[in-house]
Image 1 (cartoon, rainbow, N blue to C red):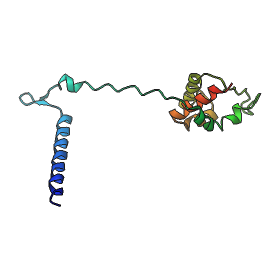
Image 2 (cartoon, helix red, strand yellow; image 1 turned 90 degrees about the vertical axis):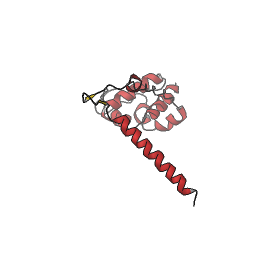
Image 3 (tube, rainbow, N blue to C red; image 1 turned 60 degrees about the vertical axis):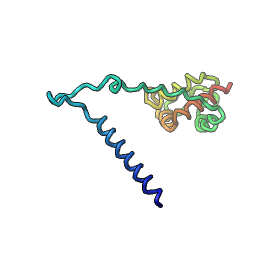
Image 4 (spheres, one colour; image 1 turned 120 degrees about the vertical axis):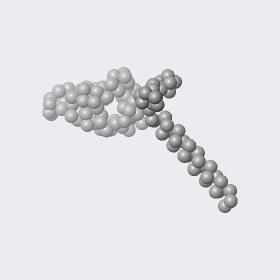
Length: 139
């Protein structure tokens, strides 16, 4: 028990010091004589560059399970929708980049089709990559 008190006190002091340092960093520096803000040093002003997110790699095995609803329309040769009446494209063998971009465009509303938009909105970036990997592997 005697040892816990100094540890707790040290932790409290460290947290207080961190809070004061964070508060000082957030407050703008001012020139006391002029009452004007002073520009922060260049090292503090330059924000660290945010690294680009790593490209998502698709898993075709997982993608196969995600495409069960896709096969209802796209898996039937010669299938046409009742409304509006148009040919439903075959997706097997398309490039992964094309499939991924198309699904993103449906999700963002850049491509107009209510069913496709609803489907694409339900998928994460990883899901889209997995679906594209699977569909591109089908010949």
